[in-house]
Length: 133
Image (cartoon, rainbow, N blue to C red; front, side, top):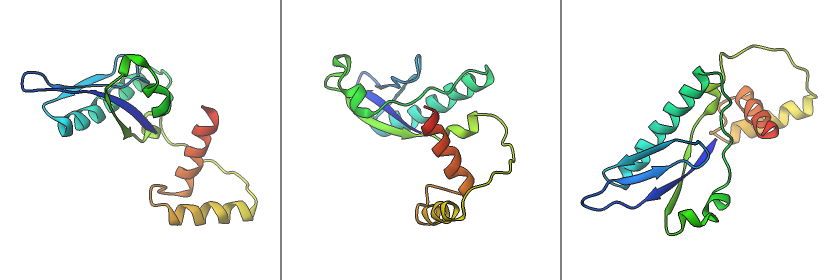
């Protein structure tokens, strides 16, 4: 999932601040922009791990455009952090499903040409997450 992050500029006396608007209470900071981006990923992953341990839902990521329209963030820098949220959803379960052969072939062809899709199962899990959000 791509989580938009808002970045507050730092200077010689202040760290670069990061906020994840879709995950309430998820903040971080870094000594420079590169460090702030690395720390943002760690903050998101840590927050999602705590939510998973508490049995709470993984927050849906809104679009960058949605958040950039918020006047509270005027003049800030934006980025997105990609996080594989499936690892916070519990143990994988094997299941048997039936799909038309044509659909399976199209899914396999898509996975083969899109390296971010690691497997047919990953593709189906991601598609299900999008549909359920």
